[in-house]
Picture 1 (cartoon, rainbow, N blue to C red):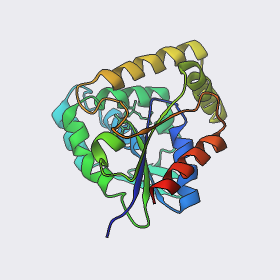
Picture 2 (cartoon, rainbow, N blue to C red; picture 1 turned 90 degrees about the vertical axis):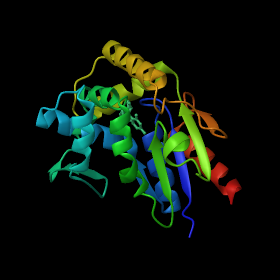
Picture 3 (cartoon, rainbow, N blue to C red; picture 1 turned 30 degrees about the horizontal axis):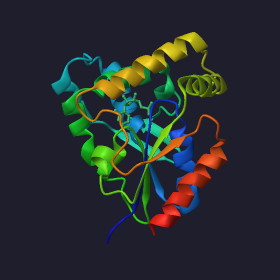
Picture 4 (cartoon, protein in one colour; picture 1 turned 135 degrees about the vertical axis):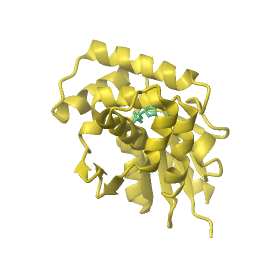
Length: 218
Ligand code: C5P
């Protein structure tokens, strides 16, 4: 039988993870944080000392990627890496290896497996364009670079990392440019996607928008 999917794509720190998780809870859906898979691949490459330009070795490493998701926690080889995959270094490394076609291809099946009854909400960069093109509802969530840098700053400080606004804004712009300009699965709104600019919205307002759009698809 058909399992419904909602996709939420958008740039770094746009708030899509927070919104997606709340919508998932509200609907009782499963949640796929596809960025976490790229971050796990990056962290495992850093651990294993795989060269970050060795496309074949990186793609191969995905086959033996031993990751787990439980109650909001994320594991790599049984180690709880929920916090460590959020480090900026890991995010930047993730964005570099995410530009490699063989790495993206190696991660497709893993992502499709998250589609389980009663439904899935998936967030990332290419959820609506590449991974779940038949999704019931596609959302492209954005926010100004300043709003996003500020959110990322708060997130990092809350998690006990140190952070600097100027560095964050620079990282963010670099990562946006890399994600939007790469040849495979560049960040862009899927056909038929609803655009949601959250610069001036509260989290709850954004969640209500998505739930409202989803209600109309049924
Ligand atoms: O969303 P998050 O910041 O955790 O993602 C980390 C990196 O992984 C992104 O900068 C992007 O390059 C890559 N990514 C991707 N496709 C996805 C999700 C993440 O290329 N679906």
